[in-house]
Image (cartoon, rainbow, N blue to C red; front, side, top):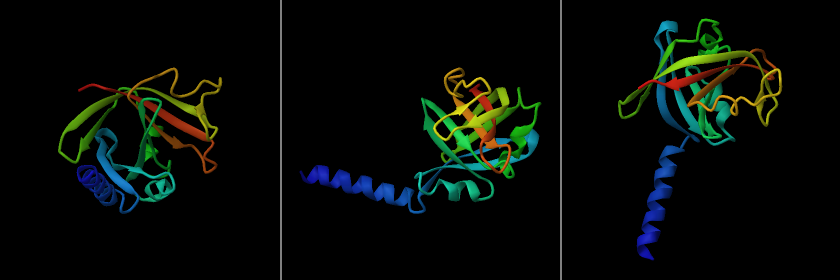
Amino acid sequence: MKKYLFLFLMLVSHMTVLYANNSAYVCTMTIPEYGMSVNTYTSTFDSYQDVLDAENSAFEFDAYGQKVIVDHGNQSFMVLKNTDIVGKRMFRTSADGSTETYECFYYDSNMFNLHYDIVDANGVSYVKPKGETIVMYTCNDETGVSTWMTWWKKTT
């Protein structure tokens, strides 16, 4: 019993350190061709807005087996709204110094945020047709309904 209590206390202690500000650093994401560098964070859903509102930070979470990364369209993710983004490389450098490389293979500038899913003009969910590693999205306007999305494949 003491062994399990000790392990539980270690877990709680670790979580307290990670979520002291209700967010935890995941990586630094860069797209050199656009001069973009942004830190991604996980967060509790009651404080993710703080992550989004901070300059050079984006909110990262898992949905349907893939990573989803979100930021405001008037901040770092403004660069995603380039029609020449397909073929661009993005680098994710973790706290341990390891780097993964991704390449954008698709974008859709006309997606709709329904708050329970994001769909294209035909009502197809963003996750089901692609099933790739990372989806990044940002809003096209202040309503948050019209969104711009990019899909990325891991290359290394």
